[in-house]
Length: 300
Image 1 (cartoon, rainbow, N blue to C red):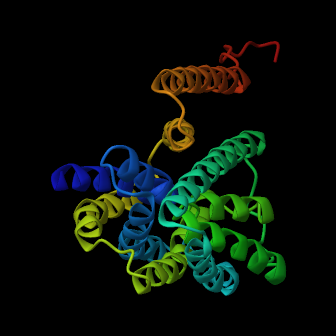
Image 2: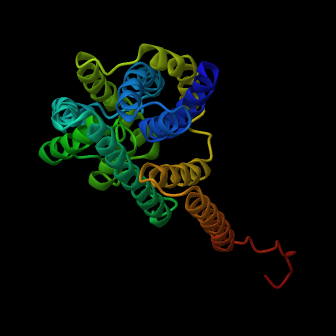
Image 3: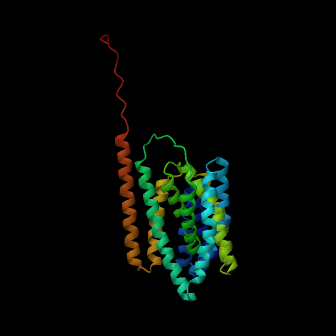
């Protein structure tokens, strides 16, 4: 079981390094659905693992200069205290069994939001002009801090959103942010965010060190590998796979039968393939065709 958790941690860490998102959105449902870990224990263990894993990926991006430090600062102003509030909210929910079910449903809702955000990001990227030059980023402190606070509450409650939801917030506020800067900024701001949420869960005794340790053994090398090759990875393929996993995991969190989950997964994969083929075909059609070189004649 520990070896399987380590392998799962490696895969999730690689996705986080590649895209800056998917840590809690993938690892927490895996712990609940595949390993039978109670939702509250899965949330706390995943947060602790993320608090150790994400600095490695953030360090790689910081060395490359793909981090907007002003954005990181204002996001943390709102997200860090809000993450503590999210942890406290889990303690205010009545009854142990009610807490587990409430967190499971909240996790499902957060997964759906993350999937919708990823789809919106992909659509925005397709509409962007191919040769567009990078626009200067003017940081808006208050909206950034407020939206960071909203993401912090969700992270503290479900462990989902330190990457998926926050990166959607960044995309909505700063659409001109380059993809590399988007991933790097998101990874770095997630370090204090998940650290605050993990500390809150540890103080309340929800942490399972054996689970967190097994995840870390795989996730740390995974995130280093993913961050190293993030500039070369086919982001569209990774994003499509991530959306499929998010949606199917959300359905399982809501208690959907396996048959429905398989149908939704198959439909999502089919749609992703069709969209990818059409995008490739349109880009090929739009490519300029060089005229043949004609022999010079004396009439010229």
